[in-house]
Length: 381
Image (cartoon, rainbow, N blue to C red; front, side):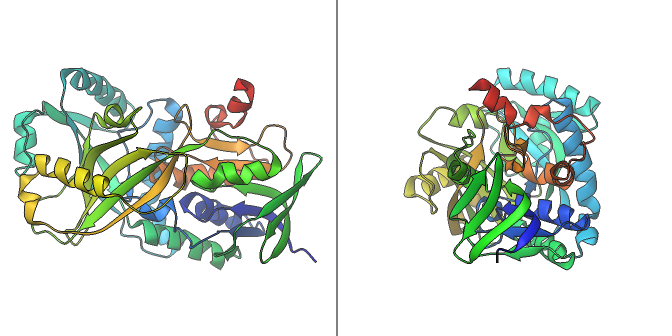
């Protein structure tokens, strides 16, 4: 006999686990299937940043960032498990006049929409970051964002979902899906066949492989992104650092580096990122990636020259052609949903996953999500 659930979620990262939690809160019989370890893919490899000032400036994204940050402030208590949530400063370093003018406009729009953002000239930036080599910089845009432990964040959602009755299964890859009459009728795994009224694919870079099992195509692409963590430092580093020309540096190139870092509570640095354009999902890091990140970091912070890198990693990071997430029901399907490729995942999923759980149950979201609908790609074809 095939066990029957109300909803099956495929993918056990932040997005899948948060959606499972919100469904379980609604009393929905939920099964989550993860091929590897919970949070063991891209989710566990991120730096844990809840970004606020770098995303799209449309009203929907701005609302989700504001509301998500507010929700994150009380989410540890709600889930019953700590994940080291804290607010930090973020400096987006600006190396050109063009970007200074662009970020001056962005700062105004962000501030007007409840995300305070300030332009900081080179002299003020040097006072705030005394170890920063400001040569070649005009200054920075400054905002406040969040940081958390991504492993504990995934675990908190998983535990809370289980407490509410969700069936969360790691080490259970999906090897096939059977469809008939515009419905997914079963999900096949080595552990058996499962059926549900609704099926959600939330597997990040692996999503296209899964949807291909039922003959569907969603243009979720990915790059291979590398990062590393250092030993503890005792240097006066308090803020998260990034580059305003990140996308200019990596866009259209087979491989590129644009470095940034965040500071862990114990003083270790999580340093990102080296990016490779690829069609192959893989893990691990390269010699050029680690060396390139270290070299760029040292041009910005020469004082880090004696700090040792302890561990590096690389994972696929998903995106769509328009850099907007994919959230909602697949066009032409009665019970198949997709959710992924979020640009500001941690900031938005506390709210967006709640809305997604409602949409799976035919509830209308509080705001129009047509911008994120999978149907936009079906129309393009």
